[in-house]
Length: 232
Image (tube, rainbow, N blue to C red; front, side):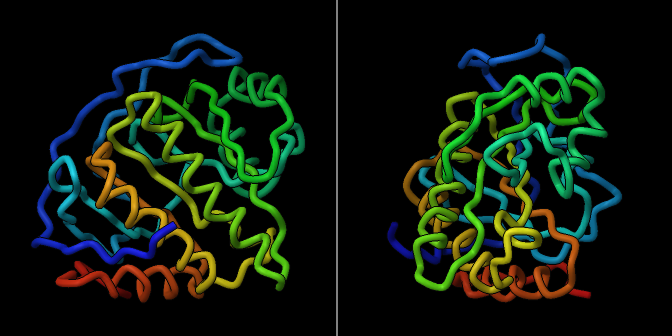
């Protein structure tokens, strides 16, 4: 990966766009959902408009709940198996209802850094992209896997035709990544996708814990020409 700090322009509302389909889900039917709508429950910490390869890309850091995001696809930072549902995975499973829980239980066991998807069922999002982070270690190998998680999630979201994606702080929390390390990986891979690939109109990072929020705000504020809407 190449570390990038995309040039930013003053933030404005990006146009909405629904997914165009593609890919074959491994479980479940095709539910409704996935509109690029603002969520009043979010506390916006950073709101940027980035010059992307395909036009402006809105990049946000918000404090909120990932399962409440009204976007085309949300990302679940889970374990290699989705049967044991706790943390972010448990919150998504509960909010998505019994069909989502069944689809998650039927999902294949993932390799670290891999991503698979289910439909969102009762969630506002049309799709849930599940990726498996490796627990943090100090030798650097887990950080490479963390970047692969983000890249795999973006790749699958693009394949599904998603224009708006919401992601948690993958690797933070139960997986033990220091907040700044998690934020660095997120910003590096997101910078590459916004600058080179031009797929998305909205990328939203949803955080909860204060140290994680501080790290993500600090990291994305390094992007040239960017200003925060609100930092608490």
